Each structure stands twice: as C-alpha cells, then as structure tokens.
Length: 161
Image 1: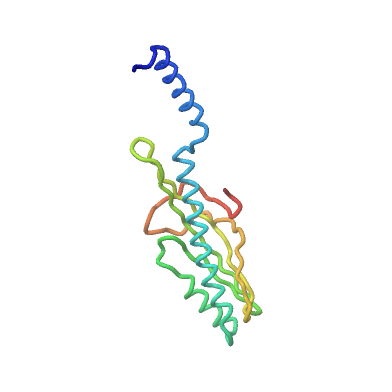
Image 2: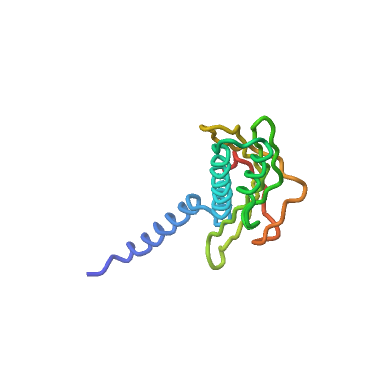
C-alpha cells in the first residue's frame, strides 16, 4: 500500500518546520567551544586552588617558607596556567595567576577552536583547616606566554558563563 500523494509533501513540510525550529535550540559551535574553554580554565584554577590549600595546611612554615612552597606548588609547565606572582604577609598567601582554557566544537565546515584566559587570585591564611579561595584579577596588559598557543580569543572572569 502506498501513501496518498498529499502525505509525502506534508511530511516534507513538517520535517522542514522541525528543522527550522530546532535551529534556535542547538548551540552554535563557536558558543559551544567558548563554553568548553571557560570550563577548562576554571578546572585548571580549581586544581591550583587545591594545591595552594595543601600548602596552607602544612604546619611550621614562616612567611618566607610559605612563599617558596606556594611558588613551587603553583609553578607549572606553562601550558595551561602561569604564575604572575606570590605575596605573603602574616601567614597569608596570595598568588596572582592566569589560567588558560581551550574549547573545540563542531566539525567540517562548523569547526571552531576557542581559547580563553582567566586571571585570578588564589589566597588563604595558613593553618590546619585552611581553605584557599579564588577571586577575580584584572589581567596584565601582556599575558604570560603559553607553549600551547600564542593568542587568546577572550579574557574571561570567574562570573562569566
């Protein structure tokens, strides 16, 4: 049994309407790549926050030793983050850093690659129950270099989606 002649054009029209309506629902690959990049930068920040928390919880360090331990814990390979500087005073540590994130989405003609930089401080006071916290930082005029890429598409903050 075959479908009536009017059913086939109606199905084509219905399919076209669904496709057009769906365009507003699906994310653009550029938007998706940006979201992935922002999340990646935040993930690297959290890893470093955890590293500084571990340093802050170690006993018996004066400010000079705290600074050295923080610098050692936060100095990375230069691929996904860079340490701008560390200051210590009265057992308080503040690290100023840049975290990079890369997102890729789409494929073929819709492929997008997006790189962000997130400048932040990670700080806390040394002690047994110490917990490092992150805060926004204005990025320097020239970002520290990374071996993975030479430029970024956007500088983001902790509050960016």
